[in-house]
Image (cartoon, rainbow, N blue to C red; front, side, top):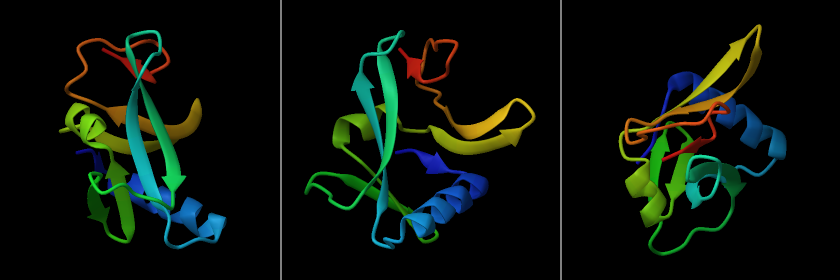
Length: 106
């Protein structure tokens, strides 16, 4: 499943605290679509399914459905903050091709 960098985990923790619901998990999913075949989806989720994969990074719980977890194996979620903008970025060694926006891969 995907790994969070320390910076990404800290940013996710800040965002969960801002939501005011400490039981939220970060759901990372891969969905069909996007300009390269698959696209990433991330959101806070309060519900999990029995077959979800789950992993903790400090206080942060990350969950993925089994198909997404397989496509995210070895991937890393990072948070970049720079002059050109800030946001989360996924480095996925399973991606053979990515699009220019960085949100889609095949």
